[in-house]
Structures are given as structure tokens and as C-alpha cells.
Image (cartoon, rainbow, N blue to C red; front, side, top):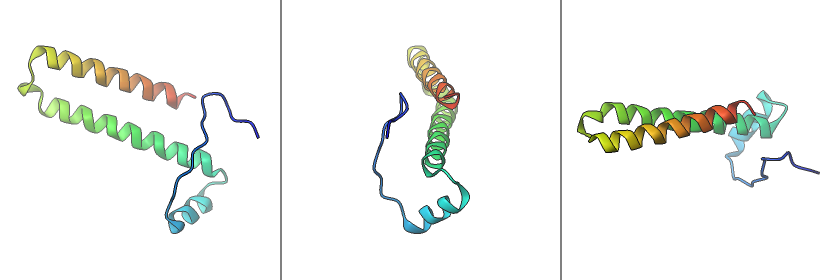
Length: 84
């Protein structure tokens, strides 16, 4: 069984009831879990952006530039993964 380039096999422990629900909703367990991880990752980026903008008055210009670059890089990475 070969793996797609850029994909990696992992082993995780998941609640049995949750896994049963996932299996009932999706014919492809791996795709469902990958989609969930993309969503989780995107939500974390959005939370970081919200914290940044909520506290930006407290930041100095250098810190603001670093945050802007970090969040931009994370957003681009997320968008690239969505397209793959």
C-alpha cells in the first residue's frame, strides 16, 4: 500500500463513539480526519489573529511586524494545504 507524496501515516486513539459517528458520516475515515485537522488548524490561526488584534495596542512596532509575518506565513501554509 503506497502513500501519497506529502502524506504520512499516523496512529491515534479516538473515542469509540466518536469514531463510529465519523464512520457513519464518511466513507473515507482518513479524509474525514484530515478535514477535521485542517479545520482545527485554521481555527487556531484565527484565534491567534484575534488575540493579536485584541492586544495590538500593547505591542511595539517590532513585535507587531513579527506577529504580522508569523500569522501571514501560517495563513499561507493553511491555504496551501486546503488546495492539496
